[in-house]
Length: 193
Image (cartoon, rainbow, N blue to C red; front, side, top):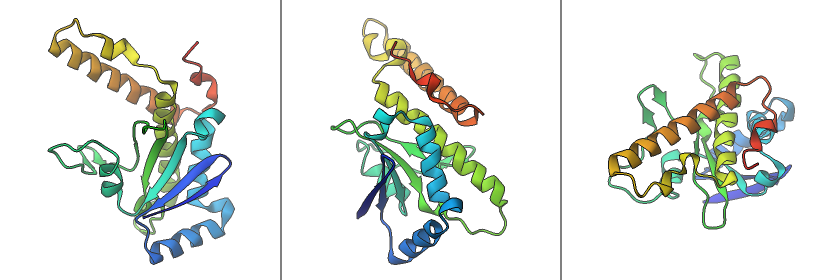
């Protein structure tokens, strides 16, 4: 099901990869300087702290839905990549029991060969989504609860839900800001102090 490798402290996991997929991945990695996978890993590494890198895996999967589903609690509603504005092209999962955070990326997105898309735009999108998901991973590693969402037991149910939604929205905004920042240094990561 999964092959694993590490580079510069980032653990790379390949899931649901066929022999044909392996050939495509090897082809991408042959040109190290222009490899989309290497660029993805570099973008992730530009956001995460050295401590984060030891507890984070970049998962490239040929079956995104199965990879997400295998990591999340079972719900009545099946996970889908469809969103109001398009498709999901990255997802960061909460830490597992060992504190490891998986950042999932669909292989089809990374190695697209579609002649109808602008390759510069694709490269930019890969950088953007990698940094965005790395920001989520870092926030998980901080082990903080914005707005003390789970400490609001004295509030009514509706207020608890609203506070959770506000917390999620604030996290999305922060991840987006980090992903579009020209200076994506680690200065923002000192939130515990």
